[in-house]
Image (cartoon, rainbow, N blue to C red; front, side):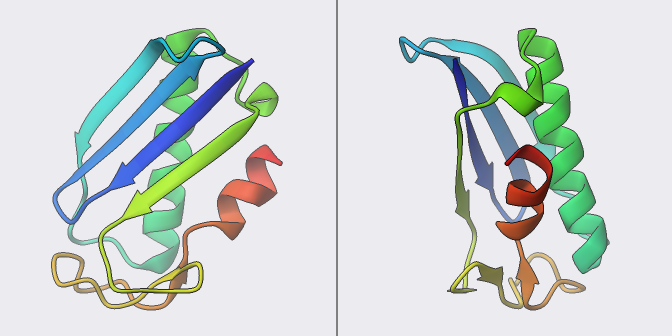
Length: 102
């Protein structure tokens, strides 16, 4: 069993993959692209989660849980007009993860 933690900041995205004991077995730190729009940000999140799982040797479809922390403001599951991401507004950052990873 593995779990994923996502920290979506205005300048950096960090994705961690941990095993059942909580040991980090995969990590990616990358620049959050400030030119993406809503769908571009969703794709970037999903691709980075998949890449982190691949580095950890974990099938992303077997991940038990994904936790997400994100720069605000947040309304429900939507990221709403964050200052450092000027082309992003009211983008759901949870549903695409649920749809892809269950």
